[in-house]
Image (tube, rainbow, N blue to C red):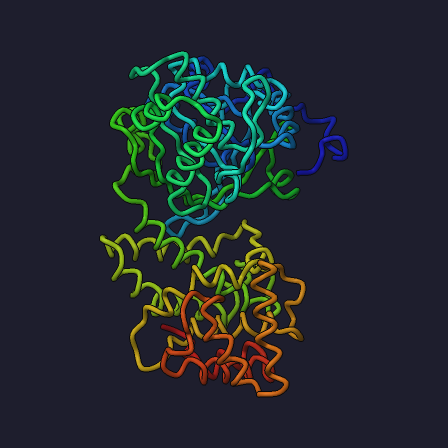
Length: 507
């Protein structure tokens, strides 16, 4: 976000504060009441996603009278202290702008979120962080660190000094809670990691258990974790960005808000393994929030990874080869837009429908995905999506490709794979796109045989590499021949030639 001190109009607008907020003409009913609610949620993470997702959802539930609690926020890393300071300077208020398309209509709304009551820098004020564990009203812990941030990292334990990793912080926090509140219902806590990791609750539980063992904490504490700490598996889905300067200036805010965030209308929070008391505490339906308590997150994760993430990975490679910059540009392109519709409806969706318990939900999700791609406000860079594309394809595209039973490969997915192969060719246009170093090294080593054995042999070696894809893609009938032909067309005539030759332009 543009710093207020560098903006020409900064002196004309006050910095957001509680005093400024109370003077606004369009505050919702109940605004003042929400400011008096007690802290009931500990949030590990100060970044834009949690602010526009969890904090926004809690704010909506508070306004609806569903939940009566606020958040105390801390940062998982010392570098997050600056964000905590910015939020404190605004009396813990910030703006969430929701803009995009919903049910065919353009949506633009702004809300001043009041769900954050306080911040604490766990690295500077460790004991204050631990004292939050002593309050029985703090019943929920949420987090969004990184994909590696919820995994076990060895470190020593000294209760007088701050732990560094999130699992270590959480272990120390839960240990304090056990010592002070004991083995009672008042000590129970639900832990909802929002990191994009399969089985994230289980991963975090195992990391905490490993810390407890390595630190030599009592067995009775480990037993307590099994009874009183509910580690939930979750799935979260919402695209969140920082505001562009034009978002702030065109019909913008009457105040300077350094913590403002933008989000698409779509949001989804799926939670498995929650205790009955959390389900009663958070009645999402009554607040109009798209969230649900379920028995198993896996079907929701599968349809998100295959339909949303799979389409992203496919369009990123092809779009970059076509000279296209953003997802929205793809959906405005006369050839790429029908390609994406065919990819989603004809090739991915039928496989997903066969794997999830409610096929109609998958169909609705597919429509939501296409609508989200058409968001006129979102600048979702294809280059950002393309980073890690080879690794992502293994999880997002290959399972669908391998699950299709037919006499020839599904052509839209095959074209995505051909685009990935050509993009990451040693002499190809994607030499500056990042990926796992080991994956890239193996991939480019396989490409080198082209000089001596020819293109089709190189494609065969790459597609048959189980270390790359987790299976042998060369066994799919016609796959090697099809991908080889597609790469030849991408090289000679570019994306338009390849799309026109290999795909009908509409499903």
